[in-house]
Amino acid sequence: MPSAAAAQRSFTVRDTVTLQSLLRPRLVRRLALMPFVLLAPGAAGQAAPSTARLEVRSDSGTLRVFTSGDLAALPHAEVTEAEHGGAEARASTFSGVPLDTILRRAGVPIDSVRGARAAMYVLVEARDGYRALYSLAELAPDLGGGGVLLVDTRDGAPLSEREGPLRLVNPGDKHPTRWVRQVTALVVRRAP
Image (cartoon, rainbow, N blue to C red):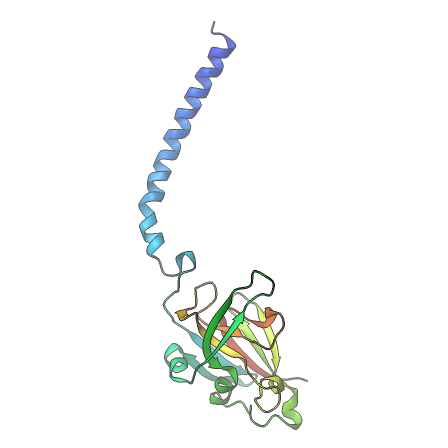
């Protein structure tokens, strides 16, 4: 009869061989797929090809749809801001279209926010379900000063898949809670 130490040794050796034989095919499959993963757009935070599509809607329906080409043709502005405060904050240069320009092109009365229009707001919607709210008055250049950008580049490169292809940047906010990533729609409404 084998000793307890011999039984333990044979179990360990047999168990190790079994694990190696199971892991080796998985490792080979994973290694075979790695070149595709490394070359895939958006992998490891790399910029994805820009296929931006932005809907501007109101309660009565879609006012306008902007594509990457439409947005590229509009005047761009740049702002250099740190996304989060603190000692480790790294400033980035964002480039994009002023939000008031987009709203104006969609037919939103951004230049005459008076009377009943002062109760209008813009709900920003993101692909992941995140939403943020801006009053139309704070976006109007003659009232709130504007300054909010719908950006498509960061430090000269297209936004990563995690951030974009479109992102809202508001340098006037003290905390980037309303810096919405992956923006898909702007919904213009009037408060009841």
